Image 1 (cartoon, rainbow, N blue to C red):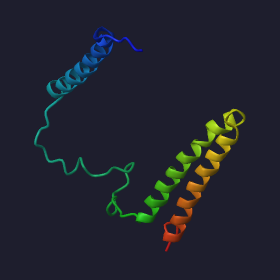
Image 2 (image 1 turned 30 degrees about the horizontal axis):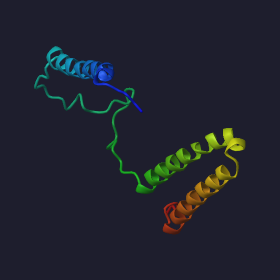
Image 3 (image 1 turned 180 degrees about the vertical axis):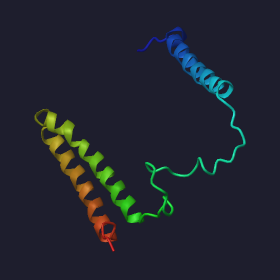
Length: 125
């Protein structure tokens, strides 16, 4: 049985008050202490500066969605591989249950990878 009383939560409450107070004070300080924007022509200021080289064209060229898709898939599969680390450290203690869990995990990853290949997500045209 857990015999917690409301007094046990006072440190959590105090920490929450400090955190929210810090956020409010920081926001108010930045609002009142920063310089106000003047209405000056900012066209020259908003131009990109490339080490003294004159700007040629627009810096916001469109990229293919495939590039971002491959990048996101890389991050997704890279993060999933991180889950192998705890198994590698504890594979003796986990025994057959751990092995079954990892085989199931790899199967799910492979099913997702096969699905991506079938949908043509990795084809560059």
